Amino acid sequence: MKFKLLLSALAIAATTAPLHANVVFIRGYTNTSTNRHTTLYWWNNVQDQASAGTSSAVGSLNFTSDAYVADYYFTDGTNYYRTSQTQSGINEIRSFGTNLANLLSNTHIASYSLSQTFSTNDDFWADSEGNFYRNNSNSGSGSVVKYTSLANLLSNVGTAYNYGVNYGYDDAFWSYGGKFYRTNTNNGNILGIAEYASFQALINRQVTTTYNGSGSAKDMLMTIPAPGAIALVGLAGLVSRRRR
Image (tube, rainbow, N blue to C red; front, side, top):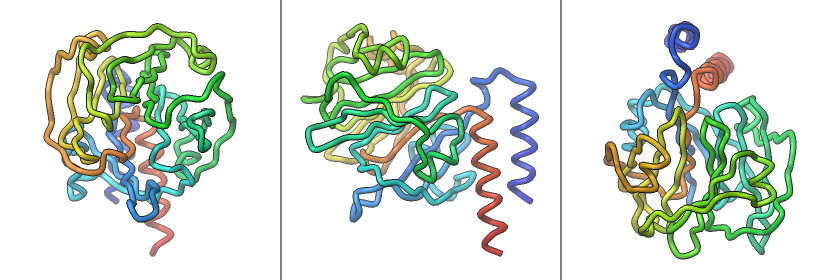
């Protein structure tokens, strides 16, 4: 019943409010013994996502993946992606399309070769305005390249920006609805999540809010829109019915 009520509420919200106002914050937890992402949790706000308090989670699902935690999951607000790598580094982007269930079941619908191989420490992410990003993280995140399309990311045709400071070596980045987020990490652990009002604010290191946090720096974190949230609720409801 809880999932049905939430599903109805999200469906109504998705049709009566701006898209960026209807999001959920998800985290794929890291199993350090297998070096894979496992359970996926989601929350209604970034503060709970940062604290990783599972008691406040809206729901959870098992997360099947052959991706190492060094691979990066990200979304442009419509499609879901992850990087793929060989021993030499990241050389491919895989697309799961618009269906979040494909990501959860590790069913990619397309693979795109990168024009060059990037370091496994480079962080890939996207926003909901059609831009893609790659942090140059070999010695900490001191700069970022912004690409105006997936095609430009694949061909490495973008504009480089300097942060003016090296963010943490394991810091992760993501964006949705004009806001940008960054994990604050130390020695492989998440200490918090910083929120920025815009990409320029991220570049200028102008933090709007910092949320205290915990968890592994390799956890997968994203913000997704209401349609994705509805999909999560539907999948969780299906799992719940199957377990009865």
